[in-house]
Length: 130
Ligand code: C2G
Image 1 (cartoon, rainbow, N blue to C red):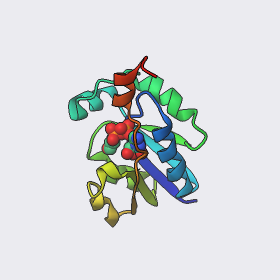
Image 2 (image 1 turned 120 degrees about the horizontal axis):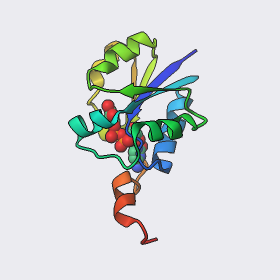
Image 3 (image 1 turned 90 degrees about the vertical axis):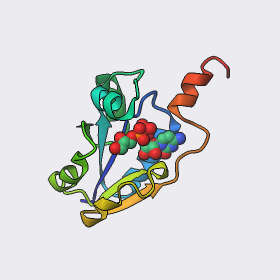
Image 4 (image 1 turned 45 degrees about the vertical axis):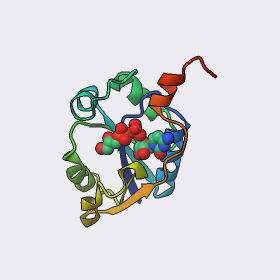
């Protein structure tokens, strides 16, 4: 069984996220999503989520491509996650191109093209204008 892992906040879930998760699942048979906790988002990414971790977890778990959701609590957990879950492939959008090449020692690293013209920030800024 080829295991894939990806990381993210997935706030205000949109088709850009779904495109990423679909392609991540296509890279293997089992997809783990490490979902950024509220604390991690605030402390490390200065992101204040609209939906709480529990609400985002419920939504991500409902996506057919996703097999398991675990918390992302630190930048450093990726190596131990890859080892603990025996991950074959790490996947993330190419806005992170090169940032996680250190994982190549442990698994395949795939940077996938982001879906253009959609983002959580854009949704927040354009609410009510469509
Ligand atoms: N994404 C995408 N296309 C978009 C928006 C997002 O492909 N239009 C991808 C991102 O590249 C990422 C995933 O969807 O792979 C989740 O996006 P975010 O929730 O914004 O994740 P981010 O805040 O980048 O967190 O340790 C890594 C971080 O937790 C990644």
